[in-house]
Image 1: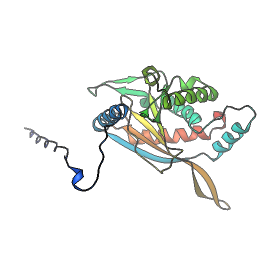
Image 2: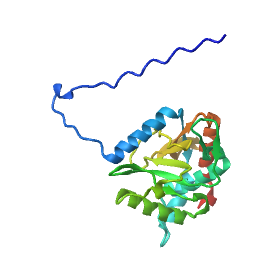
Image 3: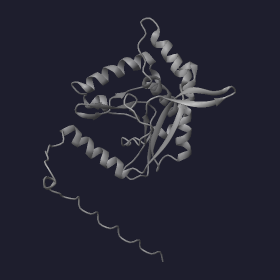
Image 4: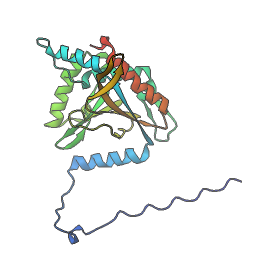
Length: 249
């Protein structure tokens, strides 16, 4: 007869401390949106078994093409995030398990036939996630225009729920801030989120000594109930291949 597993130890209470005994303090309530975000992030982190895969992809050719694109007369300025969204959309078609959602019981997967990508955005009111729909069917210019409009609105008046609903996969970018890696929290009911770091310079051996290459650090958090580590590594490698593809733009 199998032994009954021991009951889990009760969770200890949160420590209650009078910090004023140590020095001057000020107490402020969390803003409403930040409190809501905190509740969702706590749920997602505690209920989803997160694993994060870190990698760097060589984007030297990509950056050269992007610079040329942006220098063209009347060009719609393209940040690295826009073609990255297209590359992720292609990766979701290549590895459709990343475009699924697991039901509450953890027994059924819903496979989505559309590609809507959310962009985690820092705003004065806290984190918001505007969603760009049908990324796989839109041009870089269309994505850039729509993304800029939604980001501006998110940081200003805010976004209606309709503009933050229906996402399949999220991207969280720290490209304008810094860092070498982090563990983004999955936006349930999605099963993965891609963290993006600033472009870095790396010395790579070549036939004549050392060549300096531009690399993009990526951190992919995934739900280990649905996705295994090998597929996570393949997904990030595929995104890198797409960014190196001259046909991207």
